[in-house]
Amino acid sequence: MTVLLVEDDAMVRVTLADFFEAAGLDVLEAENAEDAMTIVEDEAQCIDVLVTDLDLGPGEDGLALAKAARLLRPGLLVIYETGSPELFVGHAFADWERVFHKPFDPVALTQAVLALEGGAGRPAPRRQRSAGARLAASSL
Image (cartoon, rainbow, N blue to C red):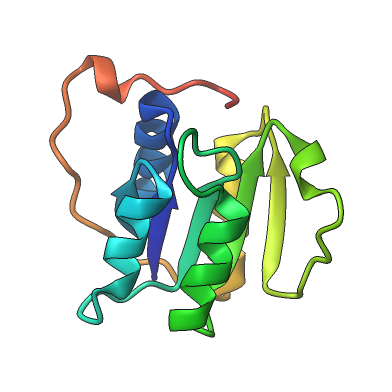
């Protein structure tokens, strides 16, 4: 299963990517909605789940990203991670959407991603990162 992880905080993105990869998920990373849409628009990329921060800084937010991505990939499952739940005011959730409120346990998020496809994970190659980038927080 392939996850498109969109997170503007580099340490959170690296940490989550490490947890996802350790669980056997393939991970594509983007730091903003524009970069994420470039990946979504690439038909050669397989994407099963979009995990996106809600507040991505300048540009589109996670809700707008999910809407645009689902137009191109109607079966895409979406998990939002947010420290700003007020941004969901007026949003009607669909059955393909889930939310994790910060701080959250990265293991729980990883398990939620695996559960979306019945937990069918497989070993994935590890990326090389600096020792500092490999530090993981117990909760994000």
